[in-house]
Amino acid sequence: MSDAQDIRDLANSYAERGRMLQRSLESVYDLLRSFQVAEANGGVIDCVAVDVSWADLAEVKSLAVAPLCRQRRVGSRLVRAAIRDARRLGAKKLFALTYEKEFFSRHGFKVVHRDALPDKVWRECITCPKAYACDETAMMLKLDG
Image (tube, rainbow, N blue to C red; front, side):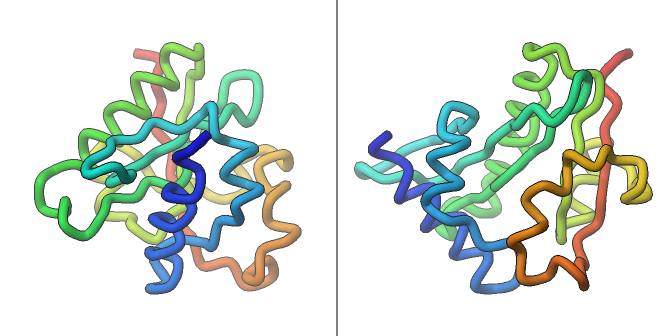
């Protein structure tokens, strides 16, 4: 629980640059058991969460790497960890809503039409400032096979 503020701060450092949506401390606590983190010098240096969305569907959320750790393939390790976690949970598909289309493409995710995702996915969109002008790309990775 002591990592929650660091997770929020790391994710929001990307939000400030328009690379991720803002995350409230409350939303981090809601997902806290879904997060995987790495720590150094007493603080979180990277994080990723896998959130179950539906019967066979999970979402990659808040994938963030501290600036000093970029270019060390940490993001790739995080996405692989998220894929392993989704498989362990029994998900058949893993999706991301992202501004980093090329990054997720390198890991096998394909662009999908937003309508391919169940309505439940959009529950967080109600409070998003971009709710009616969303510019994130929906991407999906099939995990079965």
